[in-house]
Amino acid sequence: MIPVAAILSGAAIGAGGALLVREILRPAPALGPALRRLNHPAPAPAAPATGDGGADRDEQWGQWLLERLAGVPGVRIPYKDLALTAATPSRFILTKVALAGAGLLLPPLSTIPLLLLGLPLYLPAIVGILAAAVLWFAPDLALRDKARRARAEFAHAMAAYLDLVALRRAGNVSAEQAMEQAAMVGRGWAFGRIQTALAQSRVDKVPHWESLARLTAELDLPVMDDLAAIMRQSADDGASVYTTLRSRARNLRTELLSQQAAEANADSEKMTAPGALLAVLVMLLIAFPAIIRMLTT
Image (cartoon, rainbow, N blue to C red):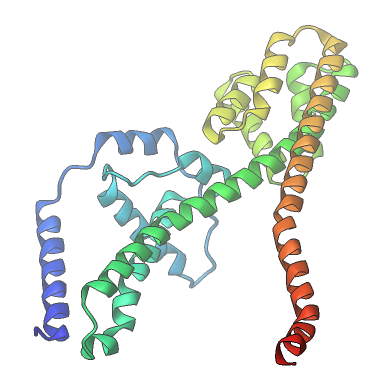
């Protein structure tokens, strides 16, 4: 039988040789992912503390992996969700590769003593491949759930923002001034994104509703489409927009309450089966002494 050390050494030498050949050849980067990175730039990460180079190293390793995995089938970067959650593609891909590598290596390494006792070699390899596949998709699921909760939070903020814009328009304020003043009232990351978009529209010399429509496309925020459409169509209508904005805010709150009620009902239904199982176990526990006495007498 081939020793385990020889197998691991051969695998390490082969992997090193493959990486060396890849670095020497240095293929040209794929054009599609490069254009997507230009069209969907990642938000600037927060500046690290003085003397802390860990974040910079993570970004450098992540960027190195992102450049080499660009265009590989099965590697998909959710730029909209990352931009919404203020995360970077480089850190996201680094997390995916680290988790997949851990899932691939930990099962074989943890079973080395069993391999020495004669356990078939293919079993740890199969477990490692399955663990790597599961952990590779784990960051995608976590990011998707975080982005879903962020969009729900943004929808709540938009309901308040619509009311604020309506009040400013009712005071005979221009459309752009009403949007700016309403954005300055609110606090939180959602209002911060709106303030940034409005400030960018002033720099680009474009109407505010165009910046909101662009932000909607970048972050996949459908709730902002209505505001952009209303303000675009009624920029010169004065206070007549008040009723439309308030109606949209009321409908949005109704939709959010309906979604929360549906989620609460789903959670309640999930607790039905555990509750029934617990009741059955209690009944068995109560009846167990009597059944044992009947069987032993």
